[in-house]
Image (cartoon, rainbow, N blue to C red; front, top):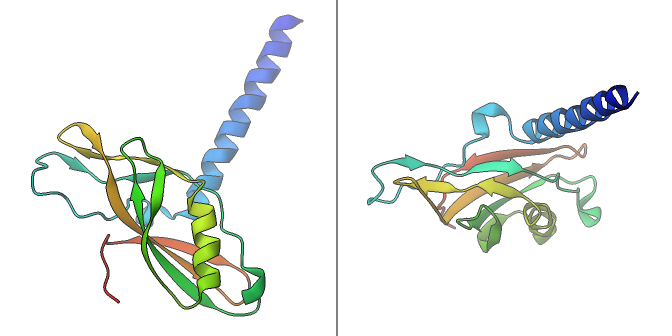
Length: 145
């Protein structure tokens, strides 16, 4: 009886993990998964940071029925945590607040330079659509106003 119960628990846990993995994949389509970050000159072996776990952004209440976007330039720590907002471009501050609220809860696989995890700056774009959908994509780490 205990072995059947243990198997049921293991299957339940596995299904939660798989469901969570698919939910994270839906936020960033595979073609936009890698964050495009400028490779430091001293890095002969380089891998850019990757979103690991994400929380969906909520559509701002004060922008319902409107369409807009927010491009966030954020700092990712060597431990893969969100370290802060460096800069942003947005059609309205409401979109920045909604996007940053979500990103604060995200974790990342940090950038790797010559085999060591390093902090990096990355850009994440949020597009808030009139019908309430929100799409995500990544871009190069720097941008001009």
